[in-house]
Image (cartoon, rainbow, N blue to C red):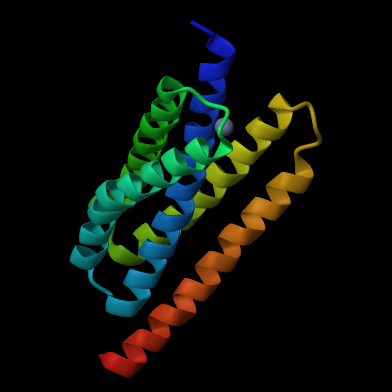
Length: 163
Ligand SMILES: [Zn+2]
């Protein structure tokens, strides 16, 4: 077994699944909380994301790895499963604040957790490549902040328009 090839597959799945899990869940929590002010909607949304979006991302990675045309079937499936597991686990962590706290506090806790997770992951990935982490950390946290602002505004707009 060539472990370096499998480590590529696992790295692809983990980094994609974890980062995607944070961004999607953050957008969903903020957008649904601002749009509906319903704890139930946010819980239902996270559960749906954890299953459906994990399948979607896993299949996306599967096709992308196939398209590289350099991987064996086993490597491609390793990346597929790693993506599903990482995305599912990361999305599920966003259930913790919403189940334990009131909605407003849970939104703030999700934002703090999400930004810390994206920053931490970007830091770890950059350090593994022996490059300075500040560039990628700023860039990725910046994208996450943008997602939060846009989904909050969209949620407000949806509530004002359709409520
Ligand atoms: Zn690849």
